[in-house]
Length: 307
Image 1 (cartoon, rainbow, N blue to C red):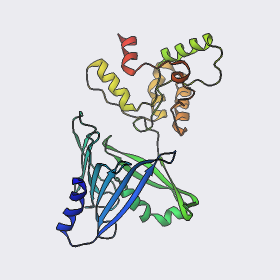
Image 2: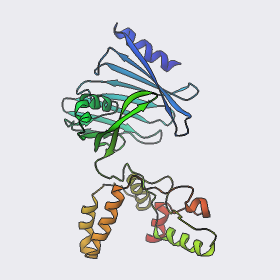
Image 3: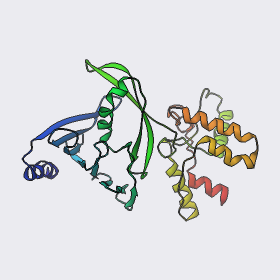
Image 4: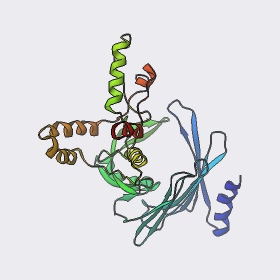
């Protein structure tokens, strides 16, 4: 309850402005409560200072966030503390840009970065303000391009926002707004990565167990991010390794001197993956579920291939 007192009492002591309270419930696809959010805002309007408390389904608080607008309303600064994992974030908006501090968990070191603040930048809950400020354009069918800050990756990612049509939500008229990446990035989109050794083992097992038919997925579950691959290389090589995403076209140009015209087919393959809504296999038809075969980790694969 200490967090509740902190969030409620400090704003009242600092200002006589009324506190507006709202509450939201996040549910799983099965309809069960995942967590609750309790919001307080001092004053009306987009620029009001806000506090958010995150509660477990049973009501126990596990995280809190404070948001303050000191620049564009769609790019608020904020501080986040998650006591379950030790994750912490601090975003400060200044005249010279964005000062970012991020700690992934209790064991991780704090990483800092200074970034510019583009005119189309969107940060955290500022996405709502961005949608409202461009509402008429969205209702006219325009596609809105924004730069969304991902603190854990310490960079912006281009997203496209577009209205997909009128719907009814809980019996009320509403609008459906679709958000998607403007490009495919391994840092955000998980991939069921696997080695050729893993594919060969599953193919061998299929010859042995002919009772299994249909699709058998081979790859990591949950899927890996680009940063996960870099971590595997870093642990094996014993030095810093960073992941940087490139377009399929750029990758094709890089490998063309090595394999010649075949690079075009490989680039086209990755282009098809880019347009796919998901690049992870289904657990029910995975080799893990059907055969009990788990794919190698990146570090294991490197140990076998590089020694």
